[in-house]
Image 1 (cartoon, helix red, strand yellow):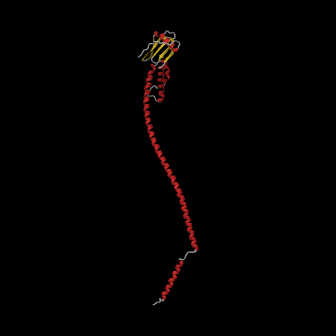
Image 2 (image 1 turned 135 degrees about the vertical axis):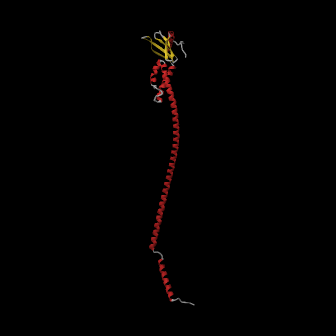
Image 3 (image 1 turned 180 degrees about the vertical axis):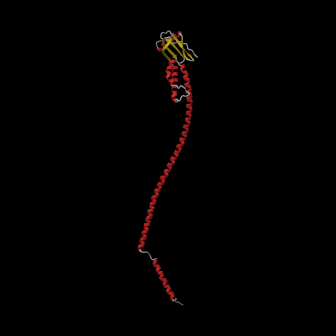
Length: 259
């Protein structure tokens, strides 16, 4: 059995259909302009995204290069620091070695200076005991010795030169035969020319030009002292002639005093 709806329900149905039709028109498909605008915005967005990506890739490559450069710089700095530390260690070792060497040199200098001081004093005492010709030869060197060896401020090099010079000349004189001409006063106011012959520092003899006087040197605590001995005239004269080559070589006997 069919039942008919009341008249007021039909009106409500028609009203609902009208409302639905209005809402449907609101959600209808967009227009062409809207679609084009939307596409342009999307394209622009994609372009910007691509630009950003490209810029990022470029920046990323640049950052990689910078990181690489910084890493190399850090490695170089670390190497420089390591070498500097090694150099510092080596310098410390070298400084310690030089300090030790310097102390050793100071000790040696101290010993050398003590030896020089002692030798200078001995040479001063030796000077009057040397033969007069050797004293005259060494006078400049003896004068360069300090007055007071203990208080002298001269450098070691300055002090050692005259010491070595004196010792060298004394040794040279002692290893050679030396003939010296001079004058000797035998009578008051009468000086006679003589010839002296020194056998190193061991013995010495003299004879005058006229073969009237002769003698030998005797070593005393005060130095060389000459003693006359006329028995030595001929032997000393013969030796002088042999020395000069005017007489044939032969043995000549001369007295020698050994202490």
